[in-house]
Amino acid sequence: MRSVYVPFPNNVIIQDNGLLVEIQNLMGEKYIHRVWMRPAIACSVSQAQKDELIPKGNNTELVSNSVALIQKATTVKNKDIGKFLDGICF
Image 1: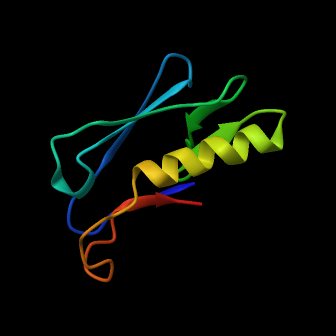
Image 2 (image 1 turned 135 degrees about the horizontal axis):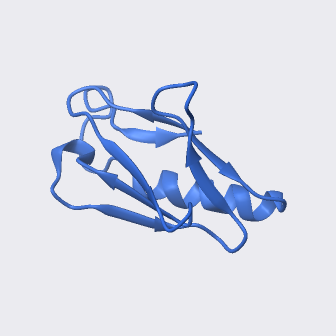
Image 3 (image 1 turned 120 degrees about the vertical axis):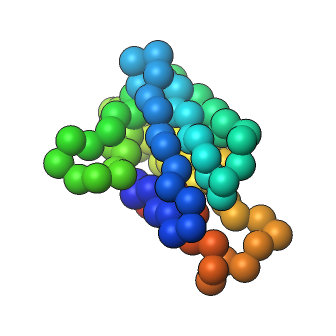
């Protein structure tokens, strides 16, 4: 998954051994978006690629569900999506 931002740089913080993903400064908001991963799924930040999240797990349904939760938490609402490109996409 890649973190995309144009007007405001967002920060992604992984906590609790990859079980909790916190997205800060999304669209310049002070609100911290917290997403808990599904059981047996861990998320990490890629060292090779900038702003890339890597969800890992054995069950593809749980991995895809965790990815969907992250994408849903960062969906831009009530804004022009052509101008505000913030979010995390697969």
